[in-house]
Amino acid sequence: MTQAMALPTVSAVGSIDAYIQAARQFPMLTQEEEFRLATRFREESDLDAARQLVLSHLRLVISIARGYLGYGLPHADLIQEGNIGLMKAVKRFDPAHGVRLVSFAIHWIKAEIHEYVLKNWRMVKLATTKAQRKLFFNLRSMKENGEALSPVQVADIAHRLSVKPDEVSEMEARLSGHDVALDGDSDDEEAFAPIAYLADTSSEPGQVLATRARERLQHDGLQSALARLDPRSRRIVEARWLTDDDPATLHELAAEFGVSAERIRQVEAKALVRMRASLAPLVAEV
Image 1 (cartoon, rainbow, N blue to C red):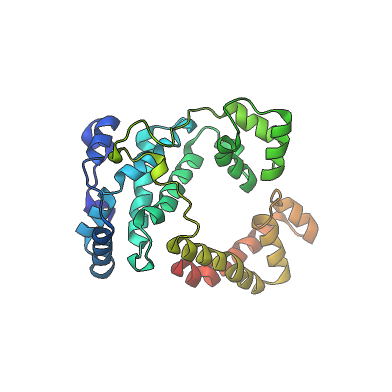
Image 2 (spheres, rainbow, N blue to C red):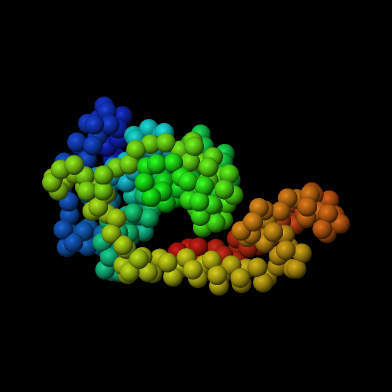
């Protein structure tokens, strides 16, 4: 789908400013137009319909990508990754749910940019656990103002995000960047300031359905997959992958079970293969 669409890229138009101007030339779609195009793509695999859906939302990607400039990565690269997320959203979008594409696409755009930041930013080495990754992406928004955090604030954030106070201080010291105005700097509707996309979507039908599907996969599906494992395999998987604390090492589990670390690795690998097979039907539904 991505190749056939031949979407404009920053390199193709010459500069980031030229790309942004080009993206703003594509008209916004009415709800009726969006429904018609999405239905054509979903039912007839009409790539031209998908292309129009993507092009009309390029400015959304630009706006979201701008919010990640503080991580020191090129705006153009952030936009390109966000465009990949947008195309994934278009591919999965179901207009029958009654939710607008913009609300549905935000998750996919941010997810793709998050993945890119984690893989490429120089600070990613600090964000090795689930809690640290949460700190990585939430610290700036949790600061009440632009000033340095006080010891009390550091302790509070550390408690709320389940990390050490030293990790909060270190992350704060190395994070830098500027905030983007929520309302933008003009009354131009085509500017697409973040305020246009940051409304609470937790009650949107599409968001509710996606949340329920994820919860079913994470809870019912995961528990069912774990239940099919023998006690030792389940213990190893839970200690290695499903703990909120630091994951157990192969050597720690080897000492617990009285076997070699290589044997633990083999048991873990086989258990994960079995779990993937059990979860495959649910993953396809999500």
